Length: 70
Image (tube, rainbow, N blue to C red; front, side, top):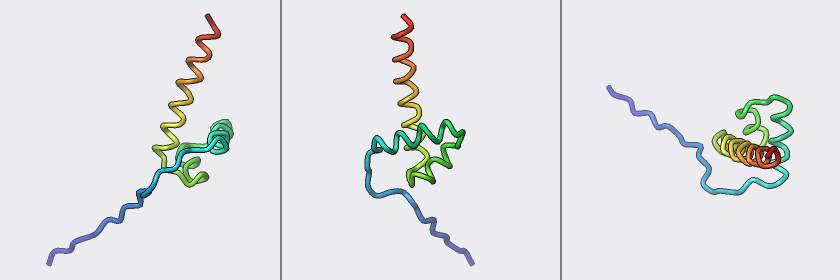
């Protein structure tokens, strides 16, 4: 007898942008050395959303710092 298991998806059905408050909280939690998973749980967002935001902001900060260094 073969059993079939259904895997439930917990993907969000809608998209909402991160707010300035969310971005500030991400920055604070990064300074507290929380992992992306811990941050995502605190903000009720997916890990990829947090990861993209961190990488996006890192690129912006890097560009700003290199521009001022010239």
